[in-house]
Length: 168
View 1 (spheres, rainbow, N blue to C red):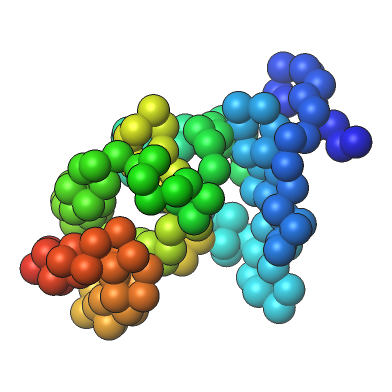
View 2 (view 1 turned 90 degrees about the horizontal axis):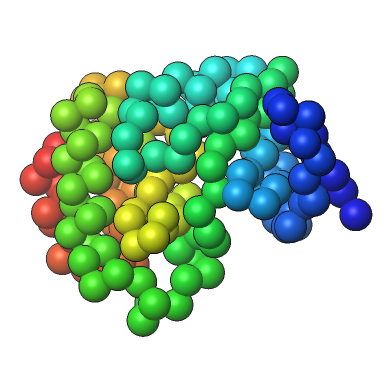
């Protein structure tokens, strides 16, 4: 069994570790994301993640609780959307997604990775996480953002893609 001590020194039991990466540990009501991507600049990923979580602080992103040398700890609300049956998702999920991406536009950010495995629900409220690839909006990233809409967000609602493109 794995344990983790939070900043207050409390020992927490690891509820789950995602086997595909061995870098995500759910610790009660928190999640620890370890930046250990092979062949990548993990410090840059970590810095980008911390920047965007702070800059986008809102109902749309998890609360950043702790930053370590190679990890961040944020609030954990539940499983990602790939693990939430579509009938258990809120009826207004497409509208929430559109509202969230309007917020991202207002904050001048392209998330660049709208995968359902990078979103969760906090009592029915959509929350996005994993901002290591996010960038300020420039023409350079438009095509990447559109691919993200088409590849992932279309799984929420096919009509959502065209509405999101209008936000570009």
